[in-house]
Amino acid sequence: MANKKINTGIIGYGMSAQVFHAPFLHLNHGFNITKIVERHDQKSREDYPYVEVVTSADDLFDDPAIQLVIITTPNEWHHSLAKKALSAGKHVVLEKPLTITTDQADDLISTARKNEVLLTVYQNRRWDGDFLTVKEIIESGNLGKLVEYESHFDRFRNYSKPNAWREENVPGSGILYDLGPHLIDHALQLFGDPQAVTADIRIQRDGGVTDDYFDLDLQYDHLKVILKAGMLVREPSPRFLLHGTQGSFKKFGLDPQENASKKGITPDQPGWGVDDPDNWGTLNTNIDGLHFRGNIETFHGCYQKFYENVYDAIIHKKEIAVKPEEARNVIRVIELALQSSKEKRTILFLK
Image (cartoon, rainbow, N blue to C red; front, side, top):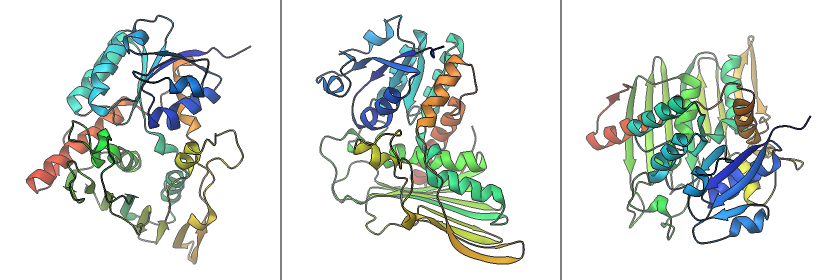
């Protein structure tokens, strides 16, 4: 018996839709990409000739055949578009971040419950191979009691990209709203909500109008969590650096899936999600009283599992992996970080 297909519409066809959403939906036989909203172009038709290109999001909301709406617009439009979609009885996948504020997030969560539809957020980096590896190392206990966790998302571009909304002075722009949700979501998945947040958020590049650097300190009992990202990091720091009472783990390099997708490589091709052995992390610890120092093979990344889970949640009523309440708390940390940096003090985490 053939799988039931979910008729799907995508709002926006920028890099996010082209790299992270459409290729995975196209390969997953549970989804039928029916319509894509493009205001000025028809690029999606070049990539997927079977798709109908429309110019208004209302063409998705008003279409009774559309069951799932994926929103890949600039952050400032997330709340209004998702609210309309949910109110029209559509399931919704939002690009991260869920919204700009927790008030907006709470409103969407309430609207989804009222209309009995699914709301989730594309926190794809839960399926990064390096994060899956770090999670396993922590759970194994091979580091003993973890005392420090540091995660970086380093880039180097010493100028602002022209016509890029993320680098303009608009609501929800800047590196904290762009890369922060990935690093914060990882920390909350591993350790839960922090007790307090201390942040240093800056504009480091000449002529910049929105933040391009952040250093967040999330405080837990007996654990320090450091999350950093910047645009002026020519010599990258470790992607992950963990210290515990029995040892340390250090890992360089970013998960390869994004770059592979940008090159047109898809998850059904050999080598998908496989990390370069040169980037495998180093574990240095005492295991059962014996010293061990060596490389640990990185788990294979698997972004395709996000939409596999979305399908199972909609069709088979299984638990959704990325819960909107979790994505909401990521926004709460961002709000507290902005307050902390502005007021130059530590802020207690209150939901």
